[in-house]
Length: 62
Image 1 (tube, rainbow, N blue to C red):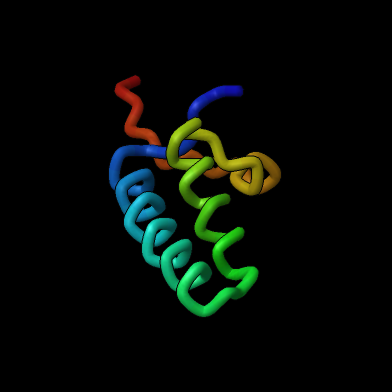
Image 2: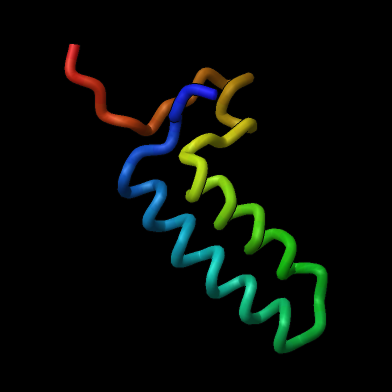
């Protein structure tokens, strides 16, 4: 797996993931799973949905 999540994208995923995960637990909703997915993609720095769209938010010096 090639990293395709940059630092700002990762930070936003962590913040959003934690918020959604907390709301999922508080309201006993399946939305918590979405928060968990965001946290996992931030942890691994890889988003499978970016691959078909050829997206990459990492900054590369070429």
